[in-house]
Image (cartoon, rainbow, N blue to C red; front, top):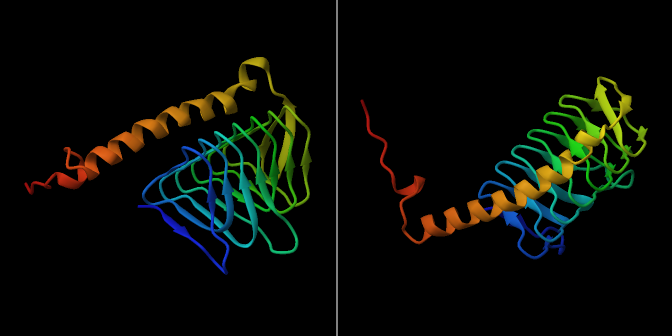
Length: 190
């Protein structure tokens, strides 16, 4: 079961059909839009400020969303794909973006709608990325405009993760009800 923790009297607010993987952590002033998903080991820690995640956005395994109190906020739009192990710290991310695996977005970064941030990119504090930009590197820089075939990556990923959440929710419910699942299998020693 996911850890959903109220802190200082502020409880996370979950939209309709939100999926939280069993090892996900959602703390404090966090709001998740309808059909958003937070996957295994991901942490959204709204302990010193607000974190907002739009509808159908997926926060993949081991990603971390946090911020610097009084300095920044973390707001992620709709239909965003946040890749495995990404760190979003006090930034704004527009609708339909793809944030690549292991990328880091630091305080007061703004990512324009439909942008693609390459895996491993490090976007330094205060950097503003225009809409539909292709970004990579450390420090990250715009290397071009998102091509039409790239433009739908974030939204397609988001739609795929909405469906994936349905699959996992059903599998978890079946396992809890006693259907065969990982929890019921014995490990056989050689």
